Amino acid sequence: MNYLPKSLAVGFVLATFATSSVFAAGTHPVTGEALADDQTFTYSLLDEFTTADPQMVEDVSGSYFVRDLFEGLMNQDGDGKLIPGVATGYTTNDAKDVYTFTLRDNARWSDGNPVTAHDFVYAWRRLADPATASPYSWFADIMALENVGAVMSGESPPEALGIRALDNHTLEVRLTASLPYFAAMTTHASTFPSPQWTVRTFGDGWTKPGNIVGNGAYVLTEHIPNETATRERNTMYWNNEATIIDKVVTLVINDENTDFTRWEAGETDKGAVPSGQYPRLKAEYPDEAISFPRLCTYYMTFNLSPSGPEAFKDVRVRQALSYALDRSVVTDKVLQGGQIQAFTFTPGATAGFEVPAVAFGQMSQDQRNVNAKLLMAAAGYGPDNPLKFEYMYNTSEGHKKIAIAAQQMWKETLGAEATLANQEWKTFLKTRGGQNFDVARGGWCGDYNEASTFLDLMTTPSGYNDGKFSNAEVDELMTSARTMSDATSNYTRVEEIMANEMPIIPVYHYTGVFMLRNNLKGWPFNNVEQNVYSRDLYKVAD
Image 1 (tube, helix red, strand yellow):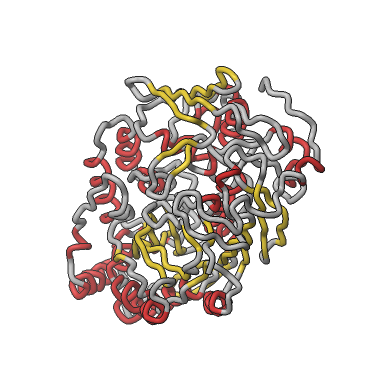
Image 2 (cartoon, helix red, strand yellow; image 1 turned 90 degrees about the vertical axis):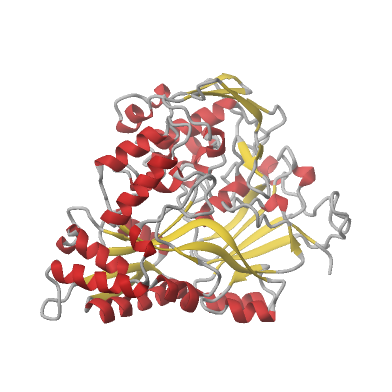
């Protein structure tokens, strides 16, 4: 690194917090709507987010948090289209394996330091460096950065990674494959810059209030783990004058019924819809009960690692459990929020993806049940030898209801005996990531809007292939897809392999279902990735 940052100035950092919006008590500069005096956005989380560290965050809620505190090269607008972030734009060569980003010269960190290309170089090297032990290091691999494999394995130093600062405001990225969608990948939190001087000064504590330095629209001012977190506007942010929301408050509420009660009492602006209550709440709050398509899939994963149950090594058992799960019961009776039954991992909302007609998805549920019974019997399980296993999920009333429904279906159709186990979110991630489970709940939201964001998870080296499924043809198909102008045939074939091998049980494709105050405006409902930026929100006067 050629960048020597200024020393930290805590007083200067504190001075960057504004106490009131420049638009408060005024009107919206574009819509002309009268704005509320209090521009505080309060929302709930089911679980504590994993971290505010861009290179370490691994959950959807944490990524939203990081998008407020940091800004990457590119952002998304309300429709999910790429717009400038720290970069004002980029160019690429004909092969689309070299990208050059031009950074704006007015971007600043919250401590006043300029944001430079060197900060991105440091962050991306940090992501790929095995010493960081990032749970998202695999994202650097699917970005196809030059020398990324050797860096991640420790064979080459992080400096060998295919990224370099040509000068303070020009960043060059070299790839080993042609990726026409590469720029879209830079909206992901793991690619955001990190302040080297702060990370080195405070180590693991660098993201704590008082220590953290960010380049986003907000700065973390309070954090009580598993209770609340507050971020307030960062006046050093290059586009601070366009920000309306002054303060964002996160409340961790582990029970969705309590969550809704607190929303109803006016404590939050965005809250939970308890499972199965969307139709009632939509009738009662037609403008505030929300449901819209998401780029996400709810699934169950089998532990196929050496530590996994021997029974799941038999594909017939995996197929039987998948076939016997009546997805319509989950979507239409348990959840009732417009969710879509899933027979493929990749949702139909994915840009350019054609959902293949996999065989078991074309059967009626009665046909699937008949086949499930035959498969289970052929595998040697029946009344005298029932299949027994544990299904693990993270604490949530909705996850619990789905688990109970699946348990009953497996019992009634197959005689299988599933015991249920729930764990707190961070413990659950550690347990699942360590292959200490039989079958576990999974949920995946696309990191960018292209089918590979889902299907790469099923490759052997993927960091989130928690079931350790390994198929040479899938690996080859996904590798070759990176250099294809149209990889539809590869993606279709991967989904067909998964439908046959059944390493996971796709359950449903998400909708965004929540309660949202009708005076909170700017939510990007048309962005299926739901890359939400609090700086784009605002509250109108009652």
